Length: 292
Image 1 (cartoon, rainbow, N blue to C red):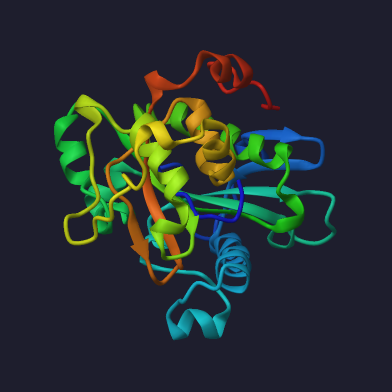
Image 2 (cartoon, rainbow, N blue to C red):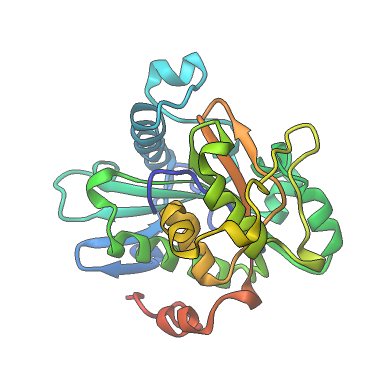
């Protein structure tokens, strides 16, 4: 992934082994490319280290505003960290403990866990409850707080993050993913070309319809369709949003300005059945592409 946070939901089942100070076996590694590997955090210490990585990206780099206690500890942390699973990418060539090797992270929240613990993070901006009610037979999972340290923003790291998400989704029987993809800044009009392209070409359809909450809704229809230069619009998309588009994702209606994180958010929706066959073939229907 890149610097912008993505809260993406995937439909899933029971929690992975919850890490409460007990290390998981080495077999919990979900994928490996060279010296990089991906797996879930095994204990509270690793979650703390992931929060430190998030602080470096979201606060130091993106200038997000966080509560004073979190700022004092130099951690990006909130209540959802206590109930989510935390996907990590580690560089095993770095000397030290696993906590010193974390270079990227994603936060995963399955629907069954969200239902017991206060709901999804994205629901504070988008009407995800209506989407869930429309699909009572499906399982959703939210992906959030995605970030990678600058020197590791490479194809290999992104591939491992998706490898981990895909393996996790398969393990828990996820039917769909959703989450917030972000543009930098709090002025949607600065992204008129990209937002309008998404509005006219990638909007959610029919049973996947979902919108920004009415009191937060900012229009994405900022340019007429005939005025959009496709090549320039694609180039203007944040890499993370562009990546999910290639997978087959749709975008909810309306954007939301997040003043704390200094971003303009759109909701990404990715049903598993919409994932491009090209990518399923690449990673493997069993997530075996980079498995060990």
